[in-house]
Length: 518
Image 1 (cartoon, one colour):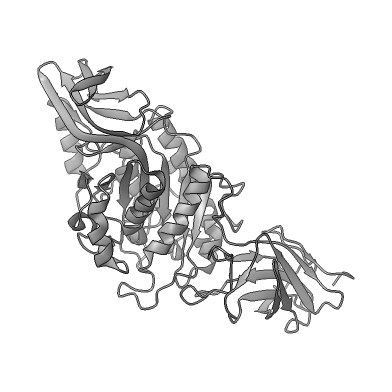
Image 2 (cartoon, one colour):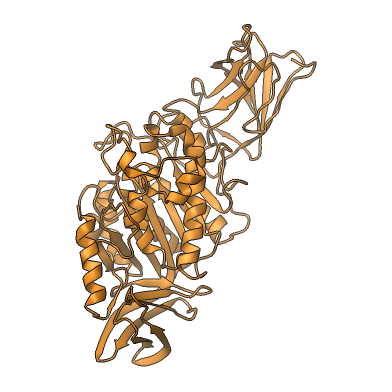
């Protein structure tokens, strides 16, 4: 991996040498963000000198901008006028006798894809890989860019290294090797998005396997959750392969991109936090979302919208029941009041026990990408009436006998199969201050929007309810409940405080109502 001292020397040399250049993100074949935002372009030059930027199409200049090179950083920045989607354009920068030209530039929507190994898995590793790779040539207007893995103890101005400069997709680029480039989920999401939008899409990958959210968080986001910011005092976890120290990936792989004007972010991370600060993820993830939004908005001089659409994947993997819940800020679905303008692809039913890369790395990234696309269409692009989430409960009511519990959902239900322990209730303990005990609540009937459960195994007041809370909640595409569009009901839980005798949820705000005060 590249090391930071070398990069620091390169940056200093670039500024001192006064050579005109674009920042490393800007290359031939790139996609810049289209209207209504203005794309940000920046680079390096002679401190105090002026840089002239020209945008041309078919030899005719359509835009001219001027920028002053700042001292002592030797950087310049230009915000282009908002442009309609399309191309190709040429972008020329001139400083005194120097000039540079970037070719084959398009305007469209730019999405950042980040996270750990499930985002880093390449197209070579997914199901039907040969078919997916062969299809690459049919999508020349979905352009890809990948940062190289890098870490730093301080915030960097530019990227240490680039694995894939902006490129027209090829099988070789999309399937370079295992966990290298290019991200399968990012590519499939972008490809499906292009098929919807029918204009250029730019995909920017910045991911590293085996990394916890703390490494991707800025010091400001870590402080919001009361976490230690000092990397020198951090103790790494033995089960994780990637950098773990606070903010080291934020510094090297996100901070250098803050000037970029984005349309949205796709995030697939969380598995590492099954080992590190699991029960803080309900703070660290919302804090990262809010912080990245603020940082990209500020870095792009307001061109990236302040509530930047942020999509994420709810982990399908073995051992992450609590983490799935915390990924939603303990609400159960997205968007929600703690995480506005977010959207979630539920993947609890996409586990892959036979994956040659380990069950933690499921190969069906196509289904994940399609579910993520639905959320993007609804949340990022405002498509009305689109169902992009699975069914979620709104109320749980007991019958007069106390033997049955009726759970009402917000959508029509499709009962796929009987899953042992799909639903569980927490039965109150007879001991003071003892926690309630979770026992199965078998399904006895499924109607249009209602599931009826039996409480025969409880024998005491039911204080909580949860669904799909197992470490491995179901087999592949075989969870208990879906909607008519094939989207699974996400896991949920209602919890009572230890020792409580009141059948009421404090986390889901879903009352368990029993006639006669059971």
